[in-house]
Image (cartoon, protein in one colour):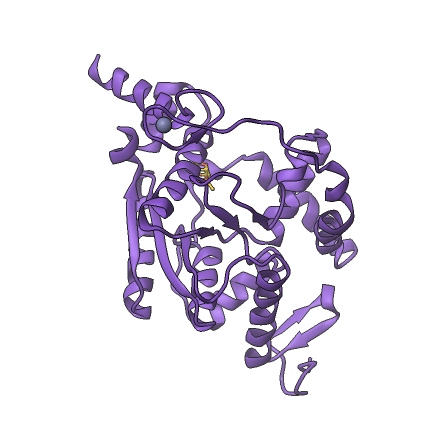
Length: 302
Ligand code: Q46
Ligand code: ZN
């Protein structure tokens, strides 16, 4: 196998691009895909500070790494979910990365903010763990960004994540979710920051290769609550399709973004208010996060 660019020995074959690359040329390919994502969706400028949400996994640390190399002004945000050893280890990976690269990492704890860690929230609400966890993550990312005066949060969602979410929405024709599926969600209220996904053009395999080649030490284990999630089943389905026809995932997602998504866009008629308790955005009077934290604190006091 020879590198498409320089003809040297290739380390990685990318069937969907019908190409193979050596290490330096693969790293450049990876950077170019991120540059293209940022440019195409005007995700952020060099003058803006970017809050990078890191979980300790390969995708978010690869994202932070590439943005630092590209010269962006970044701050990392680690949300401590309190999920047993998984959280202890993933936090240590993020702290070690930040120390190695000499960048700032902010840590916010769900237990401190909600009143209990994710496993307890799950028991109190009797809902799947990802429900309280996802709500808390979205809320805290936005609130920390506002507190720091950062206009944009970047997450490490990759092509596989986005294609699996799209497949789930299409299988159920969730027409409310389809217009929101985008690599860049604009701020629609002064108290909502922009959310962007600069890795949406890169597959999980490619981010794993990047992390490996850049010697990034990340947590390999998934969250213990991820097992059995429908998104994993959707990823497996897409991987089978990809094996049959390389490029299927890429065409599915990028084709949707270019040609499918505009058909589902409509003028949002939801009125956004500020939560009377915390001031964050809600469609009601008190936001879902404040309600959740009330419930958790009430159950702890009985
Ligand atoms: S939502 Fe669910 Fe994740 Fe939270 S409980 Fe774990 S799997 S971490 S991406
Ligand atoms: Zn609130």
